[in-house]
Length: 253
Figure 1 (cartoon, rainbow, N blue to C red):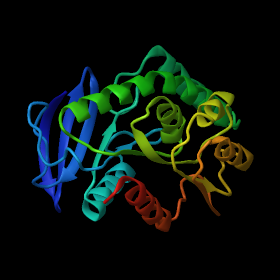
Figure 2: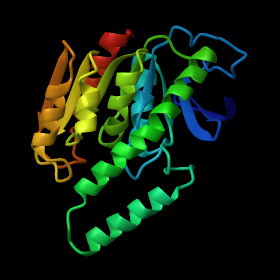
Figure 3: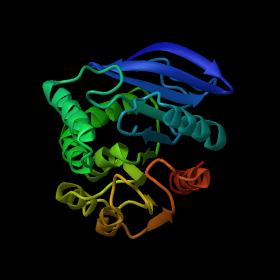
């Protein structure tokens, strides 16, 4: 892992990094930033939240940055995000290009795109989960992070659920806005950590039944469903406050 540019504003230190071609960013309280894998500082016991971005977004999307700043300033956490394969600063494969062309064709014909997005995201998770695990390894080796949590909805959930199923270091997760594929529900059945799940009742991309089925599949003894009226991208602001309290309760802070 190579840390690159560093900027600080409003008490938050933002550090760009790369790891074997994976671009990412680390946010931490100003004055507590790790400068590289050789330097272990005050981030060692600080909870670390992995932030999964949504479809069509990247590691520095406005929502990701806003959540990172809230976790740093309100909870004293560190937060990290990476570009998923084919997003942000990562090159697109032929598979990614065919997916985008298929989406454009369906939309031009006025046909639904949800099933194509679902199939692509399931395949994308197979590429992204190892990237997240390698990133978590490198961050912990660099002295960043104590307890680990995850926050990601939509595409962030499509990748985050199999990640949480495969990664025992993740101790709590916020998911939502996803469902509808057997691979995802099978992974959810292996997730037993505390989960907070966000569902938009009028979601135009993810049928309500899909989200409810995914929530039901989690093996967690503690899981909470937060359902609100509205479309896919209309999660109420107060739900972000709730997920922040949820992570603080389970990770410390």
